[in-house]
Image (cartoon, rainbow, N blue to C red; front, side, top):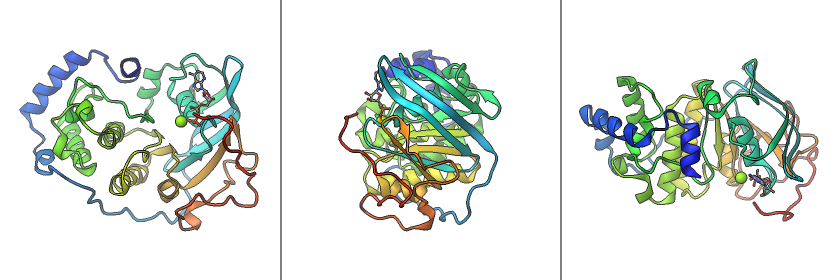
Length: 308
Ligand SMILES: Nc1ncnc2c1ncn2[C@@H]1O[C@H](COP(=O)(O)OP(=O)(O)O)[C@@H](O)[C@H]1O
Ligand SMILES: [Mg+2]
């Protein structure tokens, strides 16, 4: 699965060859800043909380998107609008179709049948291949963290560039440091615990400076310090103008980075959570340790109907 995803979603696909080239390149100009920050543990300075409502141009518009796996509707008539410089959080119980939504957007839907329309900056997205979408500036992370097992951590962060420049190396080193991966920059992802693999997945995705970043449970499996690092990177990317769609069950962290929250319930977007009127407005209320009670306009979420 990893190999398939890597082959179609990351450029080139010739991983071993790429690994050799990257290794040579990274050795030639060793990312010393990375090495010096060995052992970085969560040290991040919190980015300031956003005070204004994002009002940038719409970058993504889903209209009536339905996804069927045989007789199962994983998404039903889903509609959503995302603006530049906005973090939109998607919540919902297991099996609600959240990952399916990200798969629709990144072109990795597998055997599902997709109907409806997805407009991405004037381009009809549904007909485009996953690699084309990546060229359009759509990046993503994966619920279970994906990386090239043949490459080191540093190479994984660099390898998404066709031609590696000094600026790429500088940014990769900054991200590796910022995500507390300096200590393991020369290790292979398979040698690392899950939390570090998740941090790497995020660093790799952010390194591409995506115009639209899709994050599938980036906080899952991370400790509090790691979640702070991840949140900081997400805010930084947003502040650089990227749009972010994020799914997670860790609601405190989710609400801390989200500008808007949209609820999905077993394929159907919750009735009154429109793009302009969300169920929750995290910026307007402090996060709580328990899932926040929905605002009166939100229908109750069903629970336990499926696992996923
Ligand atoms: N490739 C697939 N083939 C068949 N069913 C799938 C596939 N992907 C997802 N589903 C089903 O679609 C529903 C939504 O799944 P998913 O989007 O992963 O939910 P969530 O991420 O909200 O937990 C689930 O019932 C799941 O079993
Ligand atoms: Mg999921």
